[in-house]
Length: 350
Image 1 (spheres, one colour):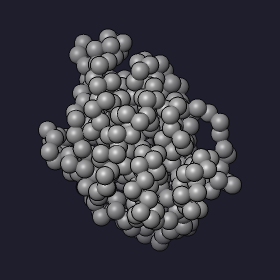
Image 2: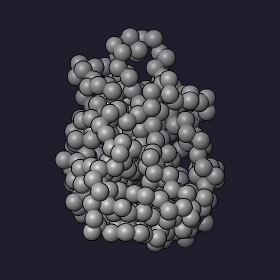
Image 3: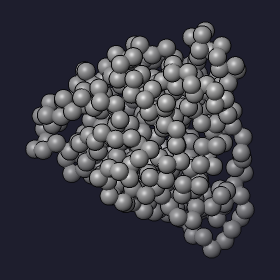
């Protein structure tokens, strides 16, 4: 039911983001200047058929090879294509024919708009649960992104395992999706609206963490989150008090990450050399690292910087020769901000 309903809901039921009945598939974050400038170069039809729930644009991606899972009408792919530059590439995968038609229709328009000699974007039709059936080479991508799509598929583990296989060592899965504060009753999956609105297939956050680790991604890092406001009375009544969150996670392909945030007395200092992030760079929700400041980090955070594309932008202090135990505050409580704690914004989808 999942794939067929997704194709029907996003290919036929919805004609644009204004048709959505909740804000689950809506990006409310204010994009940084570099992203706003790139969005200005995306075709209006592509933007009109966008249904993402977050900004899947991590820092320092110039020249990278990127895979977009569930690329839809192509907004994120065309945005990222500008930021990776002509030396990089973006491959989008989607299963909805109507969305792919929109994305492909504007390939030449975007190439000319970007001023590139050849297009650095391609779109493949396929099911992200069956990525092994597509012409995608193992360990061939630096970065994999996805925007509010994994909740729509039945076998989420297949997606995470395939992403791990397709990433290069030190590569990253950076994605936004919808999560629940408890396990959603399976019976709700039969509701086409709840599924299409990205609610029925939302993972309980604890199950997501376990699934990500089982797929090879140790120590998932929460980058940002917001509580969803379910204002549609009919939909809210069906959900019976479950709370939902839109959240962005980053998962690094690094072997041997430890289960806890272990303290080895290490620190890093950011050089301020990433374009668009000259004042500070965000590793995750709890690690916003200012330029020039010596910033204590755990062993896993050290590796996420030292063994990835971020290494050239940092100085490193310390090693793994002495262990001081677990960092204070490394717990297992609900990681998201509650509706009471979050500032509810009124910005529109970007």
